[in-house]
Image (cartoon, rainbow, N blue to C red; front, side, top):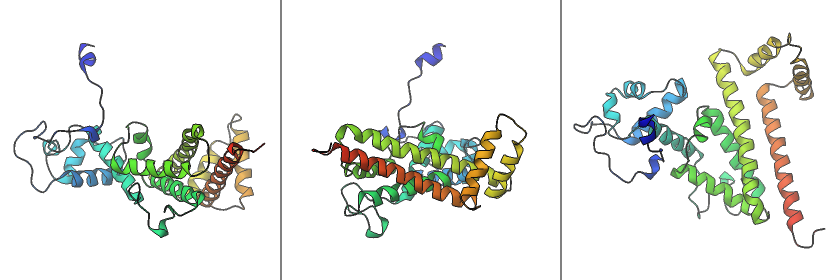
Length: 268
């Protein structure tokens, strides 16, 4: 109890203002190692083995160094995970705030906000699907790394151009990001589980549905799922997700447009 009371709350690896001095291990700095290489190896391990089994010892083995060598560059496993989280956001390839994006990305300042929003949300969804370990980390850390902040600024810049009143901007940003977070998290975890079982997404979905047919409590859900699949023309699970995501995003865009119209002066 006394020890826990003395423990200071963790802030962020991005708020460090001191150079590394050898961490816990002391001694000389290991050659051939740097923070970028450690972060890349962390992302690679998380993709291959998941968050639950990640450890400093496992990372050191991947890098073929001692665990103490890693502490030259980070203090804790939390630091590594926060660095990996921001490195993943770097895959989005977004421009710095105040600069024009490449015309082909759909995120330039001259693009329609609807197209920009769709491009950003699809990119965010793809990130969550490719890296299922991201979603629990996003809810754990403050996400103030340069790549995370770049994404946040881009989303905010786009939403500010919708015509929504100032008091509604935060809610609109939350609605969009939380929708994508939930959709991408469920999709990414389902695909990861399918791969772990050596099954295709369609086979895993059919297996899951058949496994619960004996439950009276779940009968209505199973029936609804079967009817929804039939309504989509019997396409694959991934094709259904694509159409569902696009339609749900259209609903959000339409809602933003309606609320922006309502806020315009002279609108009844």
